[in-house]
Length: 133
Image (cartoon, helix red, strand yellow):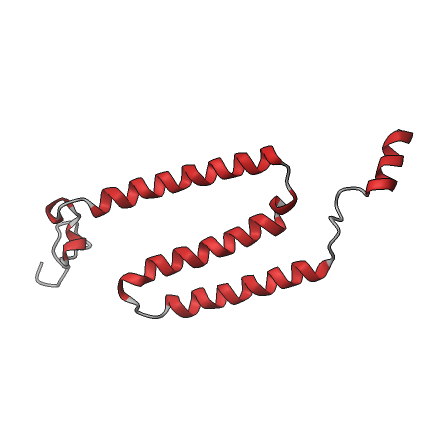
């Protein structure tokens, strides 16, 4: 017990990290800016750039949260390795999903992607409900 107390006095309790609240306020402000950017660009019609832009902004925000609020910046080697492997795994899964969608023929896509919406009426017949039916 005395050794533990001496270690804490010499090296700190491990929760300070040598940085104050200013670092967290700066990261919080950056997250707010990226959130506002997400809202503004989400209301714009950027065509095919909507998804990549949203993914880039979300990746930046997630990276800031993981590095600073989850303390990955100060993490030891094995924790960084485990986290890196999980990121590679997520990237492989996303590449598989988008690779599958991008390589399909238009005949294999759902009909809503071809420009014809599937409409299911209240009666379940596929026709709009109207007084005549």
